[in-house]
Image 1: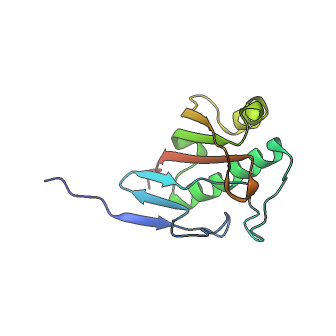
Image 2: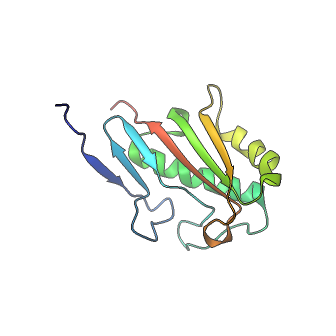
Length: 134
């Protein structure tokens, strides 16, 4: 029977703290699975750029980057993202900022319109990544 990898909780003060019974990310074997990130200020826990999808997307990706780096990974090692948008009309603006953070080969991606996101956010992104070789 194959050995089940240990589950390692990832936590960093450079990203918003988990506000419920979940972890910022879990590393298992050579993989890291992040929780969804919204545009919260890591220090204050307040939603940034409440009416600006571009600003929110940038903050979300900075938060995601911090969690990935704390896990021993990086944006360049992401294999899959899931993007949740409160309004699919914001897709082009989100995609513009997203494209600044991910370069070829870009991760696989699903984009879903959600009726509501936590704290009234416009965008939430989660990722699956390969952990860097140590």
